[in-house]
Image (cartoon, rainbow, N blue to C red; front, side):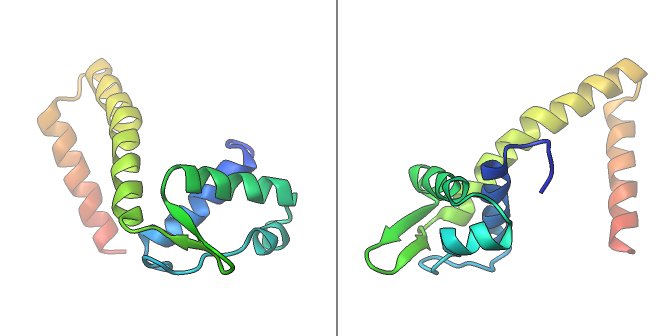
Length: 122
């Protein structure tokens, strides 16, 4: 856990990451609030808050007597939301900084492609 985000938000991100990467599929039972509290050494109320926020967002749903499960379309919804946030925060910041430094769009694209090539060789 880090200090940059509230703990409940960090828990949400961890579970969402598992949904995005396919650890959890549609209708799979997710980790319980008790398990979250134990594994991440957090207050059970914090775990409940994270799960409640995810349920409110339609990412998970309650299966009576069983626990919380991944909702249909959760992976796509998480990716779409994160993509919007990424574009708004990261890309806008990148473009502003590039403009300020006199880096053209073509040069920026070249740099991105170069970095992509470096990542693919790692």
